[in-house]
Amino acid sequence: MPNLRNSLSWSLPRASLRPVGPGGVSRLLGTVVLALGAAGMVLAPFVGEAMFARIWGIEPLTYVGAALVILGLAVTTLSYFVSELLRSRRQAADDETRFAERWTQVTQQYFDLFNHDLGRPLRRILGKEREIREQLQAMGADVPSSVRELLDEIEEQTPSFRLMMSNMQVLIELETPITGENLHAVEPVEVVRRIVDRYGLVAADASKQIVWWSEPTDFGIVYSDSSAIEHIVTNLVDNTVRYAESFAEIGLTRDESNFHIRVWDDGPGIAARYLPYLFDRGWTPEVARHEERTTSGLGLFIAHTLAKRYGGDLTVESTIAPDPDHHTCFMVTLPLHTKPGRKSGEPVA
Amino acid sequence: MPDSKILIIDDEWESAIVKAVQRRLQDEGWQTIIVQPQSQWLVGDEFEDATIYAIEDERPDGVLLDVRLGEHRDDQFKGLEILRQIVEHYPTLPVLMFTQYAQGPARDTAVRGALRWNAPVDFIDKLASPEEVVLRLRRLMGSSPELIPIGAHLLVDVGAETVSARRERDSALAPVTDIHGMKFEIFRELAAAWYRSPGELVPFSRLERYSEGEEARASLRVRIREIKVSIGKALGVQLGANDLIVNVRDRGYRLAPPQV
Image (cartoon, rainbow over all chains, first blue to last red; front, top):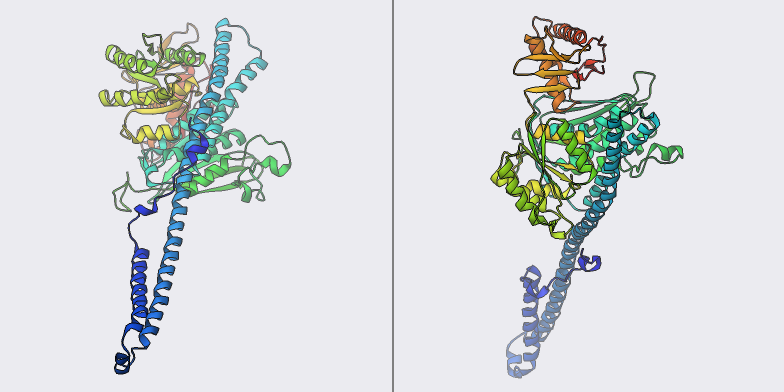
């Protein structure tokens, strides 16, 4: 692992190697004018008196020379300062980008290391829990429900841990500007399917049902960032499985310019006064109620930030009403980017 | 897909978490082969050689491959190097990458690097449940098997176009006689979707193809009711509205294995 201080330092750009720009040209002109002015001032006293008598205006040569000197000095000085200002601004922007990239790279390396090291004991705990479950099953003994619940609790915490680690990774990545390289062919149906695979068992253990569908059935591919879509939808589904009463539904649709992912649950609903804060960093319903927090409040913030970052949006609609009308519905809208090299508006699938 | 052969390459092959996955794959009817390097030194290169030899010798139907093979820094992404070789030499062999880095730069690097977007390669993190691993491998290896077991009590034979139910009296599988033709097609469609992804809903529009007459929805409803009555009779239980085939919010149907 590289030393952080060394990794974040960089050498100053070598100005001497920079090509001559517009600042250099004006400085050159200024220098020529300055030289002409100086020459005029120096030569003026040596021109004979007779010539002074004959040539009207030879005396003003001194004044012209002096004026050219002043002008030359002004142009040279101004061009120097202007070009320095432009160069330092450009360098500051380059340094900032380079710093952000290096910061992300180094933090990512540390994160990978911690992720791996944290994952090791967790894998051991999870492995042992699954082994205990199998041994109890093999013994054929009646397992007390309290023991089963304890084992289920370990298993149910796993998706939360996986999501927490992913969210940390996204927070690191958010510090770096995105480029077109992030876009590639993605099957949104496959992304949603993966997420339902992960949360289906957790939902079933909590006697909740989670289903998904797509319209059209053969949804096809889109050009997007699969990692970003997965982060957005995972955070929404994690949230929805937590608050749903008994049912959660994920629907995928598309129109000419966007695709939409709708995450619906039959939970108690969110009060209208809380909706404006829902996507704020660190906000959870417990914060409003001054209760102990059960989640980090980062999930919806990350989902909203990522959707905006990729030119889309995340909106919410919620109703508090008597059974069965209460619900919450999140709607993600993301653009159908064109494949690199295609003309805008050309179909992608 | 019973009798399939799965190759497992993981430097923690003796850990409880890998063993649990291995047992679940075997429950699925798949044969598992764990790749163990001959050398006592568990370095990435040893795994690389052993994996390539094992693929040539065993001709597996799928591969479960760890990304990190060994603790040395050079071995951090050794699995991705092995993956590139597999994709180059065996482009149709499904590979499920078993990793701590299921999302983010490692996956993106792999996808953008040597892989085509449609290569049969997927990533799953090591904390995934064994059921999740099985679902991913099923989809990677092809989602239309000839035999689809639905829980412990039902079996759909796609080739023979039969649905068998486990009888209550002797626990033997016996065909449900009156599910054939369009009723079989409806049930097969639901079973295939459930096998691919248990949460997947089959929209009415897809199932209405197997209905007749102007009232396609009503006809579909009748056929679904008849399927449930036939299977319920074979299992010796009465199936309610939320058993076996469930209507989801008037959008479509999904399968739920019967709790007998």
